[in-house]
Length: 430
Ligand code: GDP
Ligand code: IMO
Ligand code: MG
Image 1 (spheres, rainbow, N blue to C red):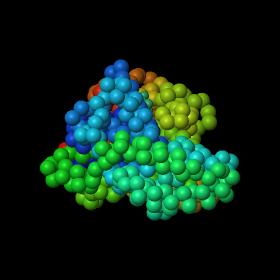
Image 2 (image 1 turned 90 degrees about the vertical axis):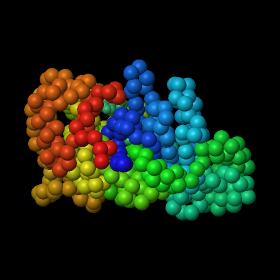
Image 3 (image 1 turned 45 degrees about the vertical axis):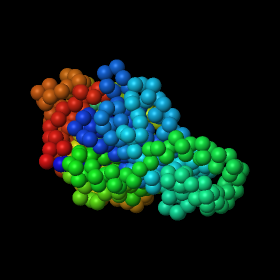
Image 4 (image 1 turned 135 degrees about the vertical axis):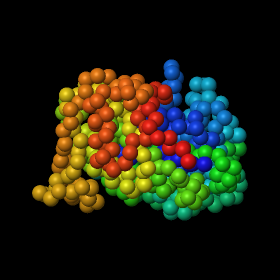
């Protein structure tokens, strides 16, 4: 049976949630493997709109197993707020269909404090984070001083973990001019949430191994995007996890052979939230128009997303790094009505042409996009459900994207609605 990984191939918000929701009809298990509640995945199903941050998008379909893997950083209070919100929307969430890896590190209020303190202290050099404590939580995981889900089951362990964690954080906070942590209050909060969280705690690696052995189909749901990857993104303007497909295996406890198909989610133009380089960013009417037609406001923070033309150089690069087998091209409808469309096909830096984005920040700052211009289309593609419904100029645009990124289109999306989706190649096909 084929297992599929969905990853964002740009700077996030490519439409991963919509595509994962659509594909999850064909899957048995849907697993998150990195990131945390910095993600905002929107699903539109008829009259209903679901906004998910931490829960795998498959949770909205009955009968599917939703898994949060060890690669995620989990804020228990945010998780339960999200569960309450979805329960009120009629989704059934219980411990027999939501499983959380026992070795998942927790995001605590002190991580959110630190995220905000650092951003404030950085002033103009800020990253523009979501303020959810993601970076500090991953730092503590790698620093071997985090509290993990399983630690909540035993007070003695929790005490020892708290000692180690607070020794570090109190020193840091002192340097940033913040009060020390109220240990008793934090411990009480953790002991209070423990009986709520622990029923979901499982050896997820084992559940995944059993699922695989019994031929279940697994859909891995990436968060963020490849250009926000801690290693390959536009560092330091990135998130703190590996957002590439390889993280699906290590972030749930499986071997690399568990992945059969990597589906890259690609927006038909480019957006970015937060600071950092963005070669094809538009400050003109075209950028304004993309933002308005695409409703480009962040799901998590409500911030306006920066918009620009499609950058084929970056997507070719991220498809290569994530081993993308096919892409889902989303928001094609947002391009309806432009007379001309531009695609970035290369960069010029100090008179030298590049076919990739160099790592050096000083070079990135001087990148000038080289554009190819294409005819737009005035017909509507919104809601198209087959190739035959697309105007010739739109098909030409899609074909040119495929050529430039060196990767075929497996799916197309033409509106936020679940069923306004065109399947070209089934990622789950064996
Ligand atoms: P994610 O973070 O990758 O899941 O993406 P978000 O949900 O943050 O942002 C994508 C937005 O575009 C959401 O509001 C979706 O409902 C919407 N969307 C997804 N696919 C399409 C599409 O093909 N056309 C249009 N117009 N909107 C889409
Ligand atoms: P989804 O899954 C878009 C961005 C933030 C900031 C940087 C670091 O919805 O695509 P962090 O809080 O992670 O330390 O912020 O990463 N960012 C996202 N941008 N979509 C996301 O998730 C993002 N998650 C984080 O804006 O620039
Ligand atoms: Mg999003």
